[in-house]
Structure formats: C-alpha cells, structure tokens
Length: 128
Image 1 (tube, helix red, strand yellow):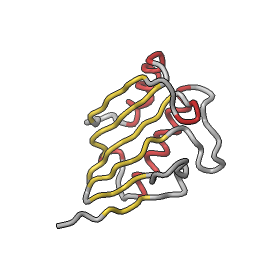
Image 2 (spheres, one colour):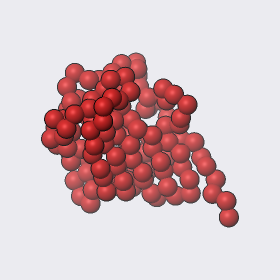
Image 3 (cartoon, helix red, strand yellow):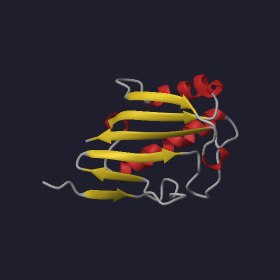
Image 4 (cartoon, helix red, strand yellow):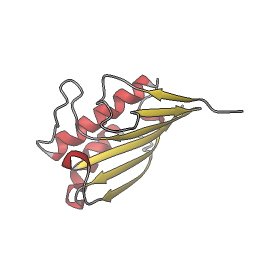
C-alpha cells in the first residue's frame, strides 16, 4: 500500500525560503522543516536575543503542527541547530517550557552557519 504525501502549509508560519515545504505528512508522520525565527506576519527576523528567537521558532512549529491537526504532544523527535554552544542553556530553558512532560528525543548541535545568519534552527518529527 502506497503512503500518500500531503504537503502542509500555513500562513501562520513563515513561507519556505527555498525549494522545500513547511512540512510533509506521510501516513501518520509529520516531517517539519527547520524553523528559524521569522515572524510570519511581516517576515521580520526576531533575533533581538536568543530567548525571543527560540520562542518565535516554537510558535512557528506550533502553527505548522496545528495545520496538520497536531500539537507539541505529538512531537517524537526534535533537532536543534545553533550557531554556538554558548546559546545552549538559554535555548534549552525556553525549549523546556514547551515540553514539560514526556519530552521528545532530541539532539542539539553547533553548526558553522545557519540560514539568514540566525542563531538557532529547530526541526521536528511528529506522529498522530
């Protein structure tokens, strides 16, 4: 039996800035592209500080999840990419407020450069 691929797109999260979809639903699994701190209302970067940046990313992720009829409880895996491990504690503090019980599996790694020179990008996988 073939699994149908459904493209998930919402105006409540930033438009893709390249040849990719905000998320793809395959069967019961949602693969969400990496989110950066773009405010979807005006496409401005919300990078005044790492806390604000991480909060905007989590809002964007929640918007994509909602469009797929899911929420943070459905997240089984998260990947955090940051420009420096110096940001780890602040990112983790914000992230923890969104996943208080039964948090998903996760990795958090420092990378050389991220899109638009942001400090953090987060992608998730969720299951219904």
